[in-house]
Image 1 (cartoon, rainbow, N blue to C red):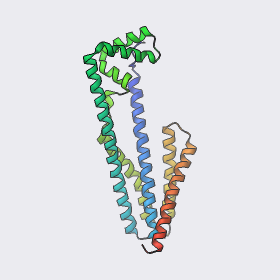
Image 2: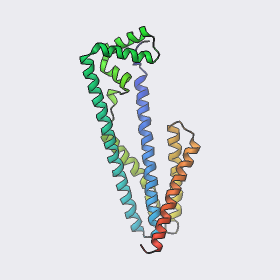
Image 3: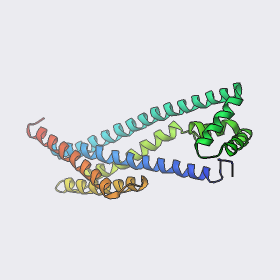
Image 4: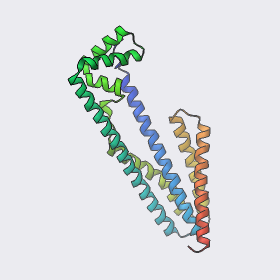
Length: 237
């Protein structure tokens, strides 16, 4: 079979895209958990006022989610612009020097393991079918039909961070003051176990070290901020 654009490729690319989005969502939620937990636990070290904890938590949630969304929008917009520029240049080269581009596609297919004759035949067939798409996928590693949408990325980051941040926020304001710190720490560490496990599974990595790193990082963040909050509270700041 000479056509590298096999029937299974769209499915594989779609699955890869979905896994990347899911991994980003898990990591975004993890960021929301850790950053908001560090904030509210730090404030809890200084004061036990529920209204103060709620205000601080909501401020951290909104600031963090907006920052994540803005950063993701800028990042994906830059990537999308670069991909569109590369596609435009490739389209221009195909129009101005089609023979050279056909030779280039042949060489790329040869480098992937096809024999010279088969690579030439495949390059000709792909060029006849859709030259730009063939070069985009083989030469640039870009699927013209699946360019990332910066607005989708921004909203996904916003929602993922918000969902993660809600856990420590609710855990610190809902329980009685005598147990709220213990409830928050326990809920956060349990959630970090889950996000660490999921991120490792999605990346096909060992789950144990990923969970341990996640939990230790979150515990350290809460310990540092609680210590700082307690110190500030003790001196009356």
